[in-house]
Image 1 (cartoon, rainbow, N blue to C red):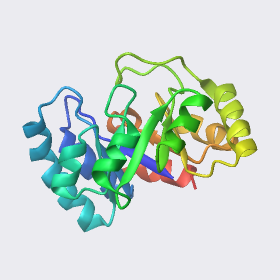
Image 2 (cartoon, one colour):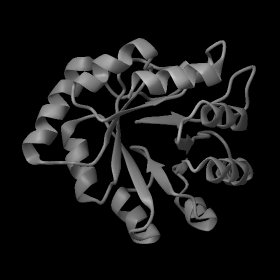
Image 3 (cartoon, rainbow, N blue to C red):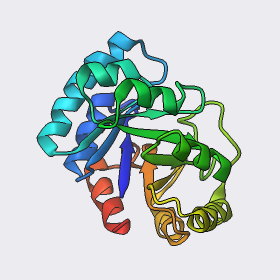
Image 4 (cartoon, helix red, strand yellow):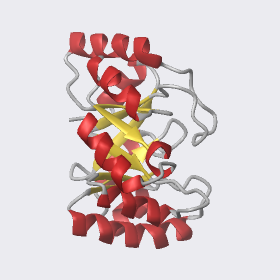
Amino acid sequence: MIQFISHYNERYSYLDSIRLALEGGCRWIQLRMKDATVDEIREVAIEAQRMCKEAEAMFIIDDQVALVKELHADGVHLGKNDMPIDEARRILGPEYVIGGTANTFEDIVQHVKNGADYIGCGPFRFTTTKKGLSPVLGLEGYKSIARNINKVGIDIPIVAIGGITADDIPDILATGIDGIALSGTVLNADNPVLEMQRLLEIAK
């Protein structure tokens, strides 16, 4: 299971990044435009949503709960400084997917209590695409989290995030974590479409 998080570089825009990930076979997209206005995000989101529908991919928008409701996107991803998950659940109701960012087992337990459907857990290692990074988890951190969630019977998907490359995927999935979220690894590859295909193959 791989979630692609939109980003941009000198070669590709946010929309390009989503198009390339979809062409490579990814079927779970998160639109993240951290420093953009709601109007800027809406403009990109409308086109991104159309592309995702065409590809039968899940379309998640980062942070913007009202926009998710307005566009009937599939769901929202909420970071540590975004709207609380239980509040988002009250606004969106049961039919939308809500993901939450976690750094510790305690974060995960709280998010599950508040109604999260999946967890983005990280960072795996230092990454330049995220500001104000939480403590790095590494493989040991994921092993410990996987052990603890099994003990208490949490069964929502836990997705590793943060500076992950193709070589890391087998080791991360071997810890008991369910999936991978990535961005730069795809976008900075010589051929992002082929790289996405390769990553999906590795994560099978």
